[in-house]
Length: 207
Image 1 (cartoon, one colour):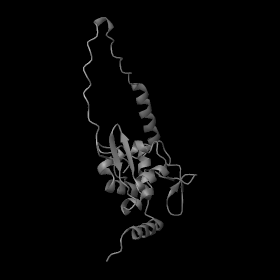
Image 2 (cartoon, one colour):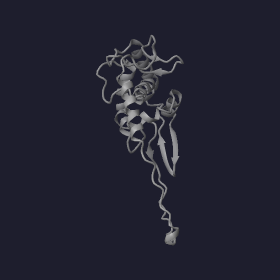
Image 3 (cartoon, helix red, strand yellow):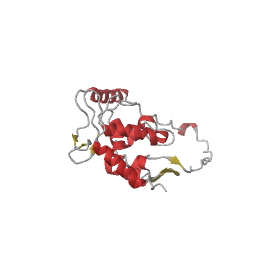
């Protein structure tokens, strides 16, 4: 998924030894800025409180196909007060751990191979997420190339792009716990129909 296989690294070059400076001119290295533990603790408590707050989470309205959409039409998740997740978010969990977790880590928490998608979706919107997943992306970071392969021809990804987004977004917003959701809505007829048609369009006909 979003980011990725390391292709090449810049070679480390040894810096020439610096001439010894007179003792009187030696300057102490600046100290690292202290970590604000209180602010970090407050942020963690705020996220935990949001996750524990009663009421449905996601802010979307359910359509006839069972998807939850924000007022601007963007796909979102829905987590009921009792923890029940919508079908598409649950489906996203299954597809993510079938196709994406090997590189991006279980639950979207990242790995040594690819970044944490939980963090990526704090800055990527739906359109950018879909573009990167379907078309791929290449980045160069300090001489190291990272490749996100295009997955638009993989039916296990392309046919469930909304599902993947809903699941990872819920994880990114810190409202969906790690692991398999225990409760879920039933799969809709619209979801079944779309899945069948999408697979048929992307899977070569049997010879």
